Amino acid sequence: MLTHDINLFPSRRDEKWKYSDLRSSLRHLSDGIEDENKPNFLLPDGLTLEEVDCEFSSVKNISSALAENYCNKAWKINVPESFKSDQSLIISNLNSGHSRIIININTGGCLSLVEYYESQSNSFINTNIIINIMDKGELDRVIFHDDTQETVRISSAIINSESNTKITQNAISFGSALSRIETLLTASGENLNATINGAYLLSENRHCDMTSNIELLKPNCHIRQLVKGVVKDKSNGVFQGKFHVHRPAQHTDAEMRHDALMLSDRSKIRSKPELEIYADDVACAHGNTIGQLDEDVLFYLRQRSIPRAEAEAMLTEAFVSDVFYSLKDDQLQENILTKIRGRL
Amino acid sequence: MLKINNLSANVDNGNKQIINNLSLAVPAGEVHAIMGPNGAGKSTLSYVLTGKPGYEVTSGDVLLSGESLLDFSPEERAAKGIFLSFQYPIEIPGVPTMTFLKTALNAQRRANGLDEMGAPEFLKKSRALATELKIKPEMLKRPLNVGFSGGEKKRMEIFQMMMLEPNFILMDETDSGLDVDALRLVAEGVNKLRDPKRGILIITHYQRLLDYIVPDKVHVLSAGRIAASGDAEFAKKLEVEGYDAYA
View 1 (tube, chains in turn purple, green):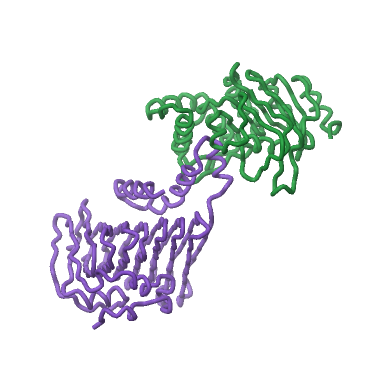
View 2: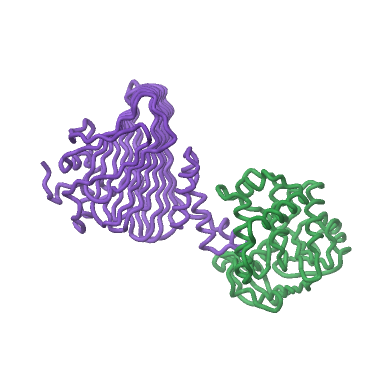
């Protein structure tokens, strides 16, 4: 049992948290650390919500350990075989404390999942979602992080996929005192087709960390990851991505990209892309760029009467928006772009 | 209309003086051409007039309709009506051409105290002008200049010019990279914009464009200043004799 001892939280001495010092963020904030949160669920017709005991998960991270320590209950949703719906499962009110959510997508089931992390409460919030996708299942996941500047937020998903599954994930974060979106995906079956995209737009002193670890255990998986970041003022962007291609995972085709735009001298980007490959017949790549807006392009727009700030906003929107082209839901895509525009 | 008085300018943090005590006046209603060898300062002049960062004016003044431009930002100068048709129009991935153009037009209108142009009026105007310049509607939906050919990019500059209806037009090597048909189309667009209230300054290497847009005056720019001036016939003489006599 963890107790509320700040020194048990990871700090920059822990490799996985070295760019996001959770311990020091929690020194300034204690609300929510020992609480259990009850999220709101808006369920598509045909799905039901169960309350179950919060059991130990096989894959561990700090988020699951905290949830298991502080949550008595977990919220479980079972997506039946061959389930399809135009409606999304919407999870919100993730406002303070810990929650564990379990989603099982049965054979051939398709789920569209939208998670809104919008806290006004300046507290610590940890959401741990465990998703199991069975054969031929599909998950389309959208994550919004739009918190106060004081919030400390971890939202982590532990996803296991069986054969012939499809995952599309799009995350957008505006950061907070510390905000981390962690995705631990284990492809335990063949033929996973996954797109794991994200974008962060940060200003003031905000911090956002997009961390993912993808374990590929079986052959023929296709992974595309594109994360784009924009940092202004004194904000901090962190990207950590890892593809771990195990020996049997032949014919893996995986690409990881992180591109960041720095709009101020005092902002920071820290990026750690990793590939660990044990199979010998794979195509794996990673790319990472950090840059500024092109002055020649800005001048072109200004020569057409567009004020500098507006020109910068236009170019920044153009830079991040292609992350969300893979979104199937046009309305959701427009909502995300509107939120982005509101921040530029 | 446009008056340049004893202008000197540097680039590269003052290490390189490109414009050297240059004076020139282009009255409203006239078309002037500036010709000259490579490195004479032709493109630099267009950037100095439009306020590109990195170009520093060390002395002299530039007046548009009697008002000095030098204290204004590039966007303020543009809103006052100075338009540069770029030698190398910039590609902007992710920004649809129509979005860009509507933003530009409305920024210009706002700066001049006018109401923004509504979508129906904007669409009507842009469609009519696009047809005139043989610009396909698909091109307007694509990101600005991305994947456009050299000729398409130059036509897009003329299209923007016709949409924005500037008071003073600067054309930097608009003829480069154009085939004869595209050149004629571009020239027709520019000729339509000839107006008693508007001045036009064409920067070019070759006399070719001036067969289609006949200038009132031709100037030779050499070593950062006007070395000689003449009428439209003077351009033909330069084409034959070259610029050596003015170096």
